[in-house]
Length: 124
Image (cartoon, rainbow, N blue to C red; front, side):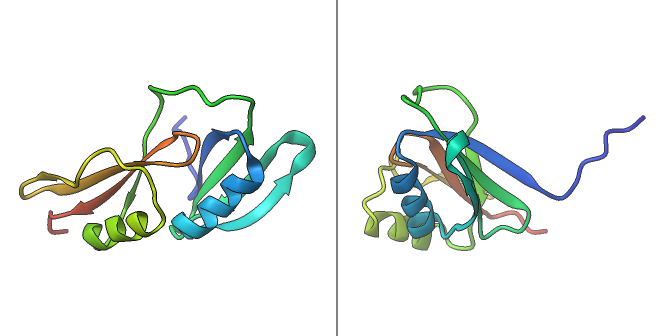
């Protein structure tokens, strides 16, 4: 029997301050709250990408290092970097370039969860 996947994915992340994190994801990532369950310390936000959500789980401490890096494709990585800069978002260096393939930029949410923006140079 083949695995049948549906057209939705939730990226689950630990955060230490639910209210502050929701505000950051709304302001910086353009997310919209779907629902919040305070008794479970959980909420989900829809990203601007159809079918891709971010789930936030409130925890005492967010472990640093390792884990998955969620990569979001953008139309213009320089504009995306300027957007991050305007919000004071910590980044891991400059835009990286793999000629003829992709441009990449790593950045972090307030709890140190790593994300990446990508801009493809490959024709479809």
